[in-house]
Length: 111
Image (cartoon, rainbow, N blue to C red):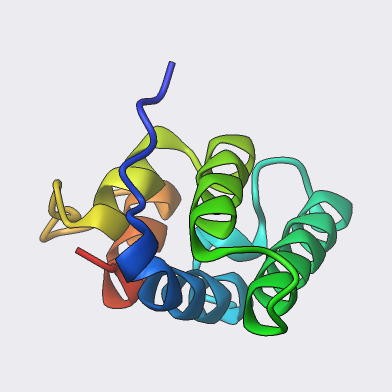
């Protein structure tokens, strides 16, 4: 089971920008999002809806941070989460497709 959380309300805009950029980067594993193209489209739509609600003032910063944490739990693998928060470096010499994807994801990290 992956350990997610820790998205602080004051960092919400950085997280939204990083995740949105990663979700549309074709080299990134977030484009595939563990389940195929339909799930990836749903993940991107959910993320954009969450960002829109926050930016239009329909949900508070704290509510949006909690919702984004739930989004991460639903759509990110543990390895992707740790790369984004900067807690784990992607491999220096990628050996397989997953490691190459994590190397690309590192460019979008928040931490």
